[in-house]
Length: 219
Image 1 (tube, rainbow, N blue to C red):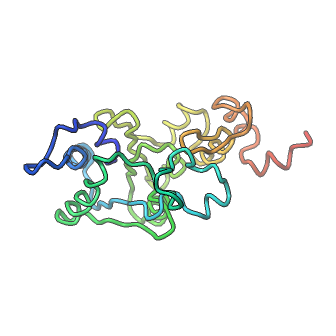
Image 2: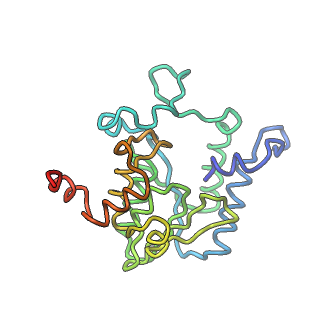
Image 3: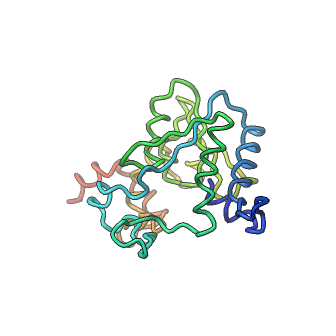
């Protein structure tokens, strides 16, 4: 969210001492708007403790490789705009000051934390994200929805199972397998060669899961 806020607010927005704070302002404005339009009883901000976990890279070496900051040497740090770097600690301080919980898990990404919380929750959940991967968590029976900010904070879409079916032609419960077949260039994840959204949906609708597909390869 703060990456989106950074790119959505001019760098000319600065503190009295000249520090760029556009991301801070945009991030807080987005939270305010979200809570106005989608009131919540509980709120948590999930952070990457590891934006590119080693265990994921061991599985797929290409994972986020195109987003590595090569100037960081062997640290494999994420490329972050220079003007955003000093704003992240301020965002964390502001969240603490206004009482919004911050959670991360060593060796895991924010998405992993969001998934864990959503699956374990005993109350309805709205996941605020611009990441389509989290569509796999949508569960109408448990009232788990995604508030998708892919088109910006002013154009939030509430994603439920019907939304996923209408958009991709598959149920939300099949989204992970669908995404594996299609791949995700934004994260450097290769899909099956020649398979796009439509063909991935057709395969999922016929075989339901990748496991079933692998068992049926001889067909």
